[in-house]
Image 1 (cartoon, rainbow, N blue to C red):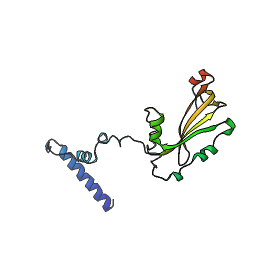
Image 2 (image 1 turned 45 degrees about the vertical axis):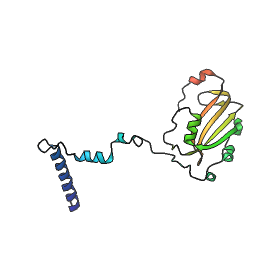
Image 3 (image 1 turned 90 degrees about the horizontal axis):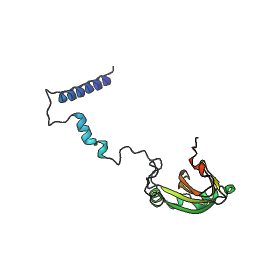
Image 4 (image 1 turned 30 degrees about the vertical axis):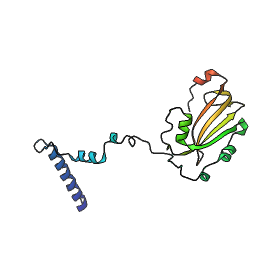
Length: 175
């Protein structure tokens, strides 16, 4: 062992001996704190900071302070529509993800790894000729699509419309 390793090992052994001495009934002082209690009191227990505990790292962080010109516009999304399926863009809204949740989801929390301050494009796309989805076929449909306003990534969507085969709604779709 070199001298740095020896010194580190010696320091670690001293700390462990000191910790054990504090917890020993012979040396116990009910008014003193153990090293682990001191560390916990300085850092805080996870439940002391519930807003920080068990949160996923934000995949899409907030960006509402970016100029609107940096976001994808209506024309971009219009050009990506499936015209062969009869898709028509009925509405386009640029808003924060939290504004979308408040307006459209009736108390649901949304996707947890996206900042509430992330700008999204909310698209209402009509399919008057019908739409075949994974679990149902619609004679007419409207899709509300929520996409990232910077790169167009699909965040979530909802389909509403007239289902042609009601039994298809219960069909399990496997990848």
